[in-house]
Image 1: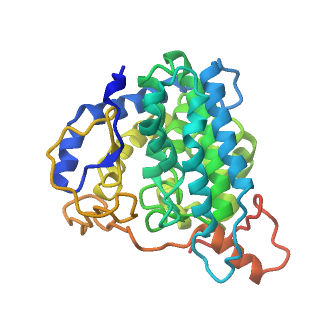
Image 2: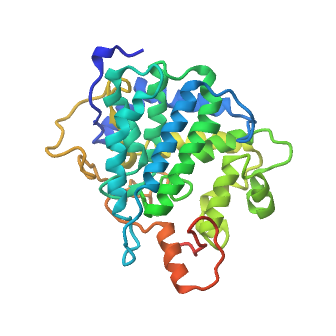
Image 3: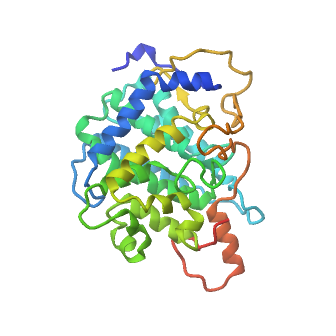
Length: 372
């Protein structure tokens, strides 16, 4: 439990490889990794459609997420037909979320009032970057940290872990899909460098846990469209595959080569183990992601401190430590893509729609398009 007198505003602290290394050896890193492992273990063999205990706190959190979706419906995209990049109306939505976040947190049972400014910072940053109008696994990590904070403060209990994945986290993903498709959020990195689709990582990690030990479904089942369609309602991994197939044409090996490679693994246990290792390396271990990470009194930074650059921390590029790929590292071609605008798949879909007649919808307002 965090002492109420110690809450403080969130701020960035990782600007160098040395600071990243210090973070990786810190209690905060251990806590995040342990929380992922805990949730991962909790949903082994659990379907999205299974009954599970839902505490008042979980119900309150879901209501908060529902409110974010309502705010999106109240904030239509502006006419931006001339651009394939993020819709400026997202900035208005972001401001609405930021403005209403304190009041939304009041509805969470047992949350100390003094903690709201700190905790709500993770919540606000979980929906995308206001300046760049993009979204990636760093924002997804903010949502996870929001749940960690709520657990540390006693709002959430160990008995909530299953519901946090199959109810809360999955609801968050559903709302994010709405925001991504309505506002054409750009992937925070070239073609989802840090995610398995253009935006997300954790649904594949938790989704592979759900499928561990399944009697019939194998990793290669993602290539069977009938299997994907039938079981997408039960397993978030397959739901994500269905989503990808609905917005991109051609086979996975062309537009999602990493997922295609993973499908050759024999068991879901191995896939899940690999996902956890990959998350540690490609999200928690990458400077272009972690330079945006926010620290406070609950998730503390314990490493070496350097003078922070002058300027506004809310600026999208504040404190950026842009790095060039180290040829000695795996995936050395994955350079820091910050500041490079990448069209969203939804924008590409809209453009394809304008050029083709009679293409069947793959989702609300979405058309399949070739990988771009």
